[in-house]
Image 1: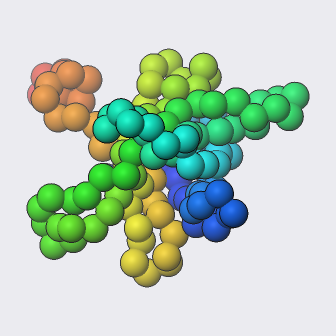
Image 2: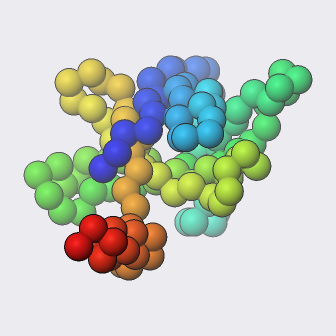
Length: 131
């Protein structure tokens, strides 16, 4: 998993919030995760993700859901499933944030799906070209 950002917990009167950033090749975005309004819908996000636009207004650029790890040595721990949809990105970015036990921050991680696609095609092309 590639770490592309970090979040820090910030307590507010309205509940737990997170502040931090994520960086990809073409941009770095500072963001805040604020509690979403309570909903009867079980699929509603737990947090809304806001970023400040160039003129200083806060824009919603995504949402986050609290999930529980189901396997591995950290089974039972909470993590954040995050969808970012900023217009500067070519398509929505699905990432996750996991608590870093050494720093107490939350690392935002990205892992490309390995079901073929770009990475497998590129590796095959490189193998053929270098032989």
